[in-house]
Image (cartoon, rainbow, N blue to C red; front, side, top):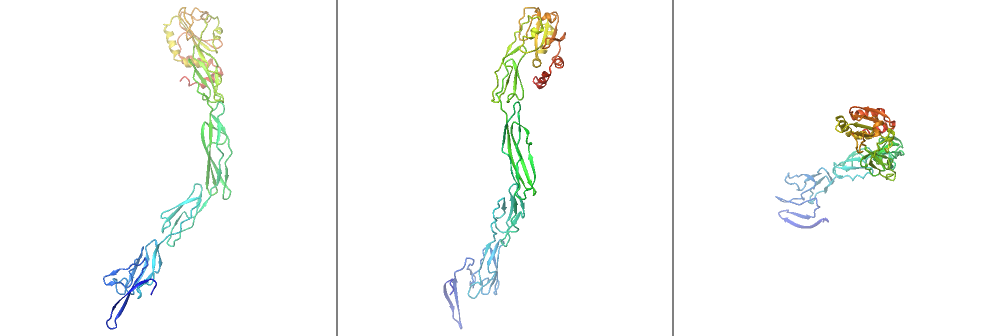
Length: 444
């Protein structure tokens, strides 16, 4: 009795010689199943191959798939591999001549790669495709894709990752803008580059300004890219940071304005205080933004001019101004004079241009007594009117330069443009021409 047999029973029929049939109930492996047909128990147990198929041929015909002498060919579904006998036969012992089962086809799990990665369509199962990729800068040589085959092996071979060159950039550079400038000159050493393969670097590319360039205020990213002979690349970057020391923004004085160099409140900038016509400056003429971010000196004020018109020379008149000025003396017999009203209206529209050219207007109008106002109104009976030879009966104007010289006379109103053209052409010093060019848009 076989070790797998559990019990038996005698089923008999004695007629003549008679026939005794022993039917043993056998403990089956999990791949076999017993079933009862229409004509009673089959001789062998019916085959049921999980993930596979049994194609059987019986001497007694197609309806007797497990009768004595039946031969079955075993096969597995795609993706599974047959383990055991490919062909079995139903024996007189009521057993099949062998056993088999279907095992899923799997390849070994691909090893992890240090300088890249791979992605598989179906893990390690049959027909799974695994595609390799590199980390940035690395170069892949060999098979970029591998497939799990029926022999449980991967197609091709593991690719090789070529290491890129190594590059190290300088550290971040921080600089303060130079005095009276909004930029800084920044230098640095070239990056350290080394090739891990043959030591040959093909080229190094700079993305950004060269060392020693002028950098404006703010942050600037400098990049370097290195290539070896196999055109593997490596890159690095660093930051150039430029700061500008700034003082608090100055406010112009009442009845005056500021004229500043550079941006106006950066380290080294100088701001000059100027007063409107009819006002004179009292206090510091200019202030400088220092490295401590504070202004030098203190803010001056613009006070109304008090002009003494009882003088007998142009020099005596000009000496009363805090700074040297040009004088435009307007004379008329009466404030209602048509030419006078036209001229004053045009000059009032050009106050900024007159101030830029250091021109102060003095009015000589009507009969005494008259008060000295913002424009420095003088009486026609004063000695000033006498030495300037200004008539009191008609409209006329006299333009006096900073040295007290009578430079031009007008008997009819002139436009500010005509007046400015004459001053810019004949009266400005070289220093004033430079300042005028720097502040040409101030009055727009």
